[in-house]
Length: 114
Length: 113
Image (cartoon, rainbow over all chains, first blue to last red; front, top):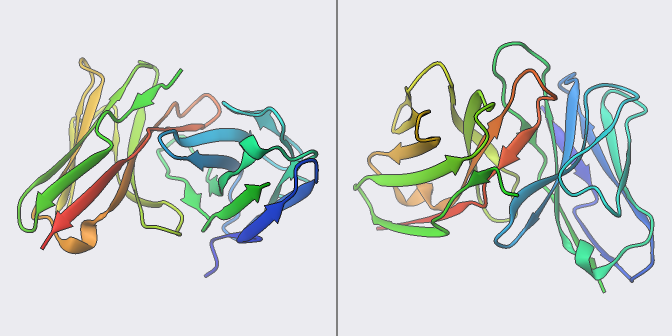
């Protein structure tokens, strides 16, 4: 019962490098999200997706791109990494439902940009 | 602007006593509220939730109270146990507009044995 799996768990990048974070969920959830967690800032929504082939901006989208080519996968890309993007990144997924549902989170990716 | 706020970054409580964690929100369109618990190096895990049509929800040692007029919710843990030591995040969402979850900044709870 994997739930939400993030790859990789740790990464160190040099300023200007690019990388892609992969999120996979096996719960057939429609919605997927990318958050970043910084000290004193809580969890802030970067981008989200309401279904395969759709993406939308969250609270802090600048410097990131996302893609949802398959329902189970949600990719977060950094085209030119900056030290300000040093953070812990969490992917989450949830059902679409008229009733109330919670989001399920992955274990996180700790990214350091030097 | 932060729509969900947790004004206490940390809280220490003796084992067996009550822990009360507070959360305020600004958007009156939020209709569902959740509490998550997070241990170091792990992802947040869902703890308890409450719909805006209720003012209280209980699950074992955990109770969430919602005061819509004050735009305030709280999480009560009774009795507190050392294993409850973690960071607690309050979250809110508007069910029919994008299903986005908005999180507070978190409160670090330490339960002292």
